[in-house]
Amino acid sequence: PHILKAFDDDVAGEVEAAFRAEGITVHTGCSLTDARQDGNEKVIAFERDSGQHEVRAEAVFHGLGRSPNTGSLALENGGVETDNGRILCDAHMRTSAPHIFAGGDCTGPYEIVHLAIQQGEVAAHNILHPGGLRSMDYRMLISVVFTDPQSATVGHTEKTAKAQGIPYLTASYPFNDHGKSIIMEAMHGFVKLLCDPESGEILGGACVGPMGGELIHEIVTAMAKRMTVTELAATPHYHPTLAEIWTYPAEELAEKITG
Picture 1 (cartoon, rainbow, N blue to C red):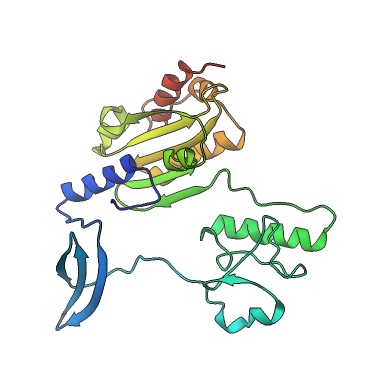
Picture 2: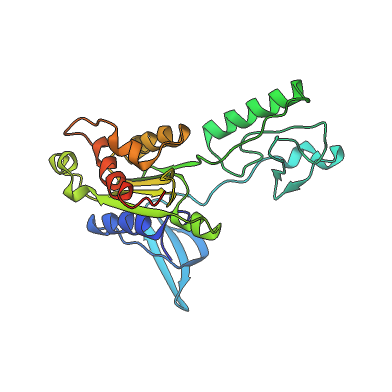
């Protein structure tokens, strides 16, 4: 078990290592059993390895997710199906009631601002143009966690590619061997690319390190244009910059393409 469960093990492990290097104690593989106030302290009780444990702190940050606040809408009266409050929609953002559409965090499956906006646009278009329906496309799903170092992914991770049986090649490059990050003294982490073994099309990318939430957008742009690792490797990057680190795994993968 590790933090950032949706991320690949190597990405999460890098963040955990950075936390521990800063003196932060990280507990994983836990089941929370209690939360209470004890004087001026907050107490969290949890079970791990069949044992009971407690940690105390001045404050507790709640980061366990959110639930859609749809209970008061009486959606069942309109024939709209929900799952734990989340409105179920198809790729056209149509609910189980054919004349009702929805979009945003109340529908999921991802609570991300730009996707919520896109869902609203798709829903509005399909309401106005029933003969020319548009669909949501989550091929370039972006995830950013603003830890220090930041963690970000776009498209497939190794976990999702394996789960869906998608063949891929992968290569990574560490920030502790990269000029700009060494200058910045920000050397935790790495970047990683996944590509199709035959065509070289970029299937996904991950960045854990300095400005990871910004750097991932180079791969977002590349995937939007369906670029290959060969094309990315040949794209000029100024030196010394953080962004040029992407060229190293791209070059490594370009040499392995079989197509």
